[in-house]
Length: 116
Length: 116
Image (cartoon, rainbow over all chains, first blue to last red; front, side, top):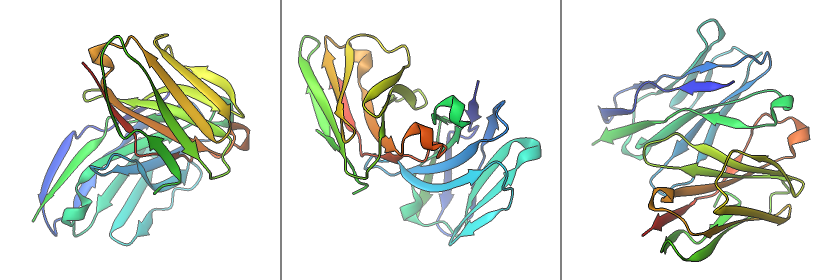
């Protein structure tokens, strides 16, 4: 069975502060994919990143960065110099092998509130 | 616009009503999904369709009835719902499950359903 845990339900920061969102996962698959999605107030889930389980390189995209640590089953997400537009709910998700049917298992989400 | 369009955006229905949610994508995807997002629960997978065939029903009550007439359209027919069914219903699409793309979904903006 797959499981994704986002221990932080809500984080409040002041603009320009950095914020790190934690994600811990469980899976028995040897090949899997990890995702982060952003859900703004409009409701849609916006894809941010997909990471293959064999690629442990950290990634940076603008103000976003991701730290994948297979040894601790974690895939944390950092927003640097946060902005008000970053206010949203962020979901970490896991997809297993092809045999698992391509299904995404989501964490409970972390609500980020960036205050001006 | 994400490429996945859901209508209506908002729906209020009585417990004896019958209504339908619609999802449409023109991304060339062959797998489509219904997810339920309640206030207090993680995103829950409801149904999966691959090449118009239902491949998963995640123990969803029969008052929810999906229909997938072709790979571009997905419906969720609702009848005799309960107030606890009030939630955001999200549709997603992806390449065919056999493509093994590891859950790389595109989500719609969702239908906010309120059952009174």
